Image (cartoon, rainbow, N blue to C red; front, side, top):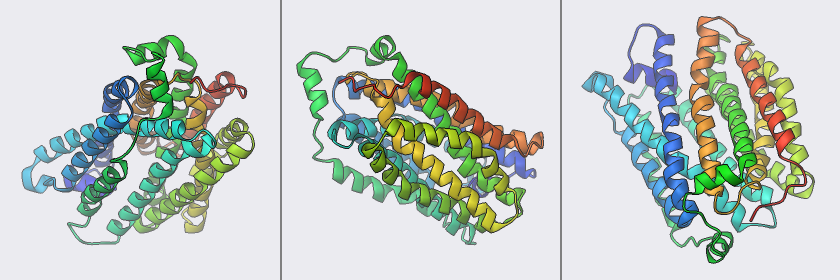
Length: 387
């Protein structure tokens, strides 16, 4: 919804410049993710998983609802832009403690199906993006000046449902056992640096790939399909919605097979094909043909699902119980802040200012190469859980 929101909060004559501003707001939340990772990760590794999971959820709901009721530039001028940035930063703090914490919780609960357990956060994230894409599609077809607020306001309903589901959540056996055996640390993130450098490196590598691949191959894909390929805003939104929905459906399926066969090799195969096929994906975005544009999203959906289904379980296997939450959260958040937060602006600069239409595809391939080398070198097939 960057094009739509840019006109509401940054009304300038140059559409590209307005998009860059809204992408900057998008990036602001990523700067704050490491802050959330430090705060919630420390609590989660030292005192238990439940408290930070509830607190981060509430913080996210409040910030998202705040965006839904925020007056636009026409009402309060530049103050609206400032408040939007603040609310996005609060969202960043919240998600910094939520995403990896949820994965830690799930993988510690289910030892029989580790890849399937670890895939549910990626599934939920993708499902959320699918709902967001659907909302953006509906907004793009509407002339209502209020409809854009509805998806943000609905976060309150989702938050209440999630809090209800988490109300009786118990600490995992792994955490309780580590606490009883005095295997926790006073400063978990420092312990992660001392004992789990491989985990930090693999987490950072996966985060680089997922950030660049998703925000280029899905979110920026729509911008290229519309501004260069000439599709309508509705067609562009529909194409990426199809890609995200396919990704959502396939993620637990690939995770199921990863538990049955070799999840490590399945992950590496996904990274290899992402390296090879990323330029093709972005070429299809500018084809100007709706069917080809959808095909690009289908390829994206399959490749992202393969890696998302396996990444979390592979990286968490290299952390001790007392460092999992903080170590994985901080490494993921720092990499995402750098590469995810800047992805849209980098792609806009490559395409909008340097006119390098092949740039985004090569950028995706580069992220896949970095991840493939790092994971292939550090994450060995025989590695077992450090719990």
